[in-house]
Length: 439
Ligand code: CMC
Image (tube, rainbow, N blue to C red):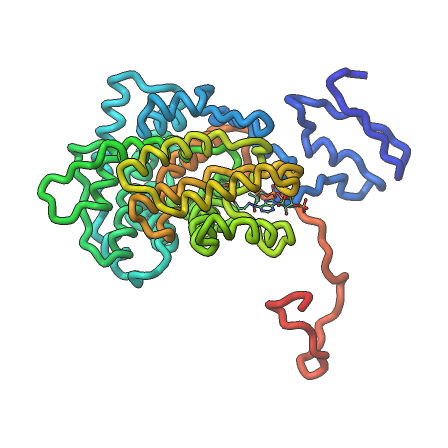
């Protein structure tokens, strides 16, 4: 018997099997040979939420959730946050190595060149209601880029893929800024290539009548760090959506719109918005205790807490907390910070949270920084989606060039009705409304 294998006895048949173990995993397809009858389909694994299924090999991001470690391409997140720029980190995440000075200069120039939006997209953004959720506008604008760049369907062409990657990194920022300006009823600021990627984003968002807008260096640094921290996080819900849609060889704009749509849910990227709303609802540190009790009665979740992978302190949260203090020195301290600190203090010593290993995640403090920058909470997830576009395209490229990857198509356990005959409409009995099964 091989030491690197799993022995299985199927008690239905008494047959035994030996499945190879590689990298701590067995191949799900190896289970197929295990059959109770010769003509049955074979054994499957059942894994709602894919909590224990590796869907790919990936060389992009390493997360050790037990020890609170996050690395991009081997580089610790703490070092990148301290020393890198968002565009440099994006290059690293997408192409696998830190760029040389010449590569970085070319990359920055390419991104800047693609940052303008076609007037069709500008008009599209303008056509939405001003108070439409900025994430809905962002998703729609990203998806509609595929109407302007039909060449993006040639996903098998590496030169073409690189062009689309540059367009996505560049235009995600401009679209994000324009969704904000539209939401505020303010005219758009078109990109200015004299500024850094982050400085330009701040200018597109916040320039009023100044002829020469100068981003505040503390805010620029803070946003740079936030963008580095959000650049990738391996196989999360949005990235999985990107890979699933991309696996059909759809164009990257359609796939990225799908990934952004996944991010928009409050259990994922819109948790940052939900946290702020929750802090506002609590209102003062003295009300935190009662709120925590309602969470423990499972009447609600404490947003910005808990993670599928991190079962210790999210390393991104530690960095964000420090950056937040630097930002507040410039913007003034929002009283909601004290509510957040009190929530964290109580939760981290309460057995409900301790026993479930629930710690603050990346979304817990980021919203407070965005609020300090005077952004409405509805824009917070857009501020997550812009830098996460880098991770999405990195995984898209990796998936397309991985010979083991194929069309994503999970199986199911059918639990519906057995075969039955069509009943004419006049002979049918009332049944629960089809849009409310089980009601
Ligand atoms: N507040 C209260 N209880 C919680 C929370 C929370 N935030 N998160 C998990 N639990 C409890 C949950 O009720 C369950 O308890 P029990 O074992 O008694 O049933 C236990 O902890 C395990 O929860 P789970 O839902 O099985 O864990 P999961 O890995 O499926 O959930 C999560 C991960 C992020 C969806 C969840 O922690 C959550 O809903 N958090 C709040 C939303 C949030 O902050 N999302 C952002 C995630 S990080 C950034 C990102 O992905 O964008």
